[in-house]
Image 1 (cartoon, helix red, strand yellow):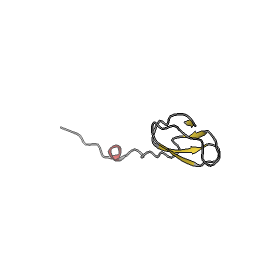
Image 2: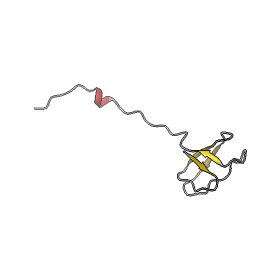
Image 3: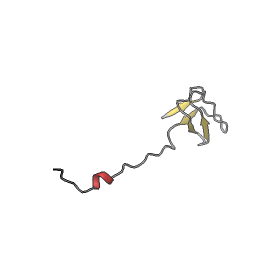
Image 4: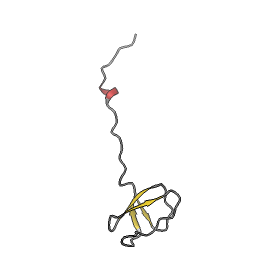
Length: 67
């Protein structure tokens, strides 16, 4: 997903400039400024999110019959 300078930030996050890869911190609801390093107006969002791998503990547990 991308965001542009002048748009309202959808989340408090670190956006990365699509031109020079400079990281810009934004706050939810604030206007996104131009890149302070190169002046670009396009930013990549969501690039630094990590997602936890699903736990396989339940799926690998032996089947227990009830009753």
